Length: 388
Ligand code: PLP
Image (cartoon, rainbow, N blue to C red; front, side, top):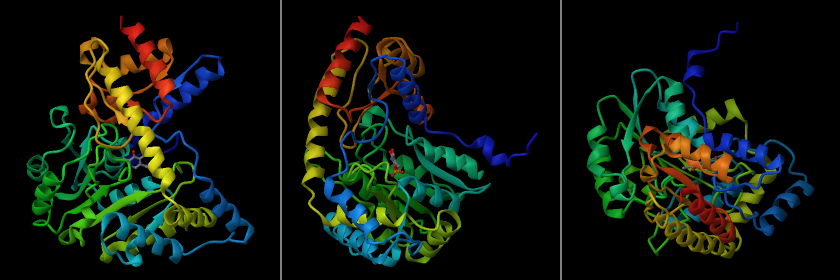
């Protein structure tokens, strides 16, 4: 019998990957499965980005790079932040890592230990709670409620902060709810957080470019009073349809950026070189394909939200960002996991139970609308037949 470290028994997972594996297994058996489970754009990475990576390989960029990322990439990130967030950030504060998840892992490892408390959104991206538990810190949920369109309430968050709080995790636009927090709520929260400079903040802004109805994304980076406590996570996965490339970055407080780079040296040394050149091309190249993708998501959002609201026992809020609908399914009489399994095995639709995103996700199901309008419509037809 091997003696695993205790933390291993506390490590959770991301059920979306299990659903994907099961959906693929059913497809191999010849079943017709529509995948509304996995959270990744169904678009291809724009060709000029792919070309930049192949060029880098042909040009001989085959070796290690500086651990936090090559300087031209970090400069391109700084320029992108200036363009989309209106903030000046020094490249020294930027650490490039293999995907958004790595920043999350590093930030939680840096602050999590027994006796510490870490606040995280629930329902929320499941890796937050998983890694907090892994470190031995106490995971304190910030409940996100449907009545507020799954936005958090600044007073609720501030009231959860204690002397033991080390890190507060925020995510807007959010997975799995699509909730986007209004600026006035963020203003209020920032005013409170700035009074606790000993508390770090991880703002997961991976869906920053996928917002609707003309509402701009509010970045926590735009609040200079938080500069010494804020870790702002973003990346290429969702914006440029690059989930498989594994490329992300964070802006760290100047005093601990070297600690993030040190974790990188201990873990993966650096992101693979060709991918970093692809990352520069993505940021500096034309953005029309990003805009087109968001327009396509917006159209699908309309189709799925109105379709879900037409089903018996189902009600769905209009998500403000990302590409997820998170309907309330309590009226169907089934719990989230039962409905998820029934839809996959009997109806041929992959979705993810709300409980995969935390205990407060019971009564909800996540539909990723990163799929064609035709497939979304077909799913809605199948759902209508199933519920009747
Ligand atoms: N943060 C959130 C809220 C996400 O939904 C995801 C992916 O689904 C990530 C981070 C991770 O992104 P990446 O694939 O770049 O690691």
